Amino acid sequence: MKNTDARPAYETLEIGTPLDYTSDVYRVYFEIADSTNEGKKIISDFIGRERSEKIISLAYGYEIELPIQCVPDVVRLLTNANIAVYQVVRYAKTNGTWA
Image (cartoon, rainbow, N blue to C red; front, side, top):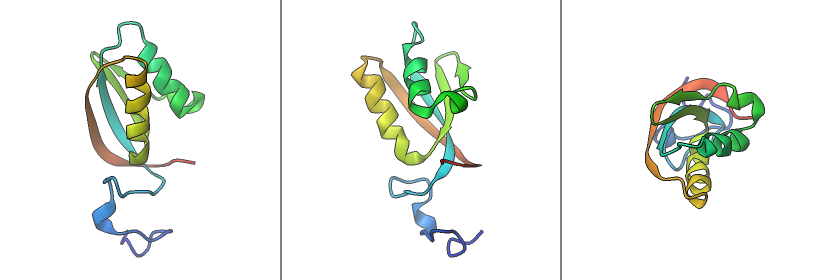
């Protein structure tokens, strides 16, 4: 799809950047210290019950799907709960949308 075909239209250079205000969804890995699963609960509460069923638990964090603009919000919620965030990795855009 060309960026002019998208609704609403947006610049190709903005895809997957802090300027991406679309409802496009990306797979994101949050590496956190979460021995009590409190981090998973915070993430689950943020993305909702239906989406939380798709959380992939890994040895040192979680993979989830969400818009790029939600990443700072999740990091803020985790750090406010005194959960250390060691890295955030944005993978490829998925076919999903955030509604």
